Length: 362
Image (cartoon, rainbow, N blue to C red; front, side, top):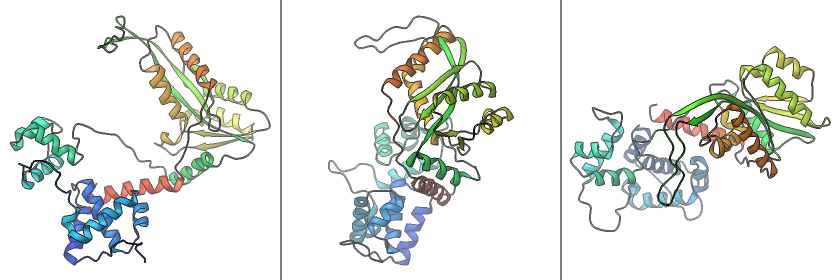
């Protein structure tokens, strides 16, 4: 297989291949070094730089850089070059110790290391620990959440819904429907202190609850317009009332494709009977634990950031009035969200994530 113009051929000794495979498999290898090892292993298999870049979802220039570095300096070439400036006073052994402790251990009194606790443990300065962590992309103080769908029809549902987004059917409307539930009407126990030069807005940490409401919303993926109604409860009864609102707003000559999640309120006998009497509706259920694929969630995020999070309401009536006002302004100049990823790209990203965790022992 051709490797591409100007790309050096990669031939590994058994020892080099063993070391590179160890770097890929080792659970605690820095991500950057693991990626470089995968580039070289793929290059030895005869893949071009373009193919490797596509396979690993990285820039082609990155592939060419580490391929060339390896051809000249072998495995040593995959390590970061020394930066200009004063020579390092911390040796490689100490740096490796700090990285190993950061990745493979915890302090006795905490769930994660801080720069100060690591400095005390290893006998270096706090600034040195911070620089090393920054250089290797380590952030022990941060954590993120994730959840992979276990839906047995995950692939089919992703292809179905993404197909709707990228190629909407003719003479039909595609609506993303969901509910933002338990929106609280909150009032602070003391008046806000407004922002002033040199001082941010201040508010008390405690608050008074004045009830909750739920927003039922339907986002038109082609125009960006949102139909929304507030109800005090979230039941099949309210969902049916919202479906009636959708039915009145959509011209009779159009078919309607609804993207919905798997909430029980969407599947009761009452709701099934409603859809059975209206054959122009076609339902597309999202995979379980995959709310990210429903575009109306993006609208809910904007509503939260712009109105709800810092809002002050003394009643649910006031809260609902504010939500309706936001919807009116939003629909004056709606802009559809741009969906760019194909189903294949999404599935390949998830597959790479699973392979990476499987190879690291998770």
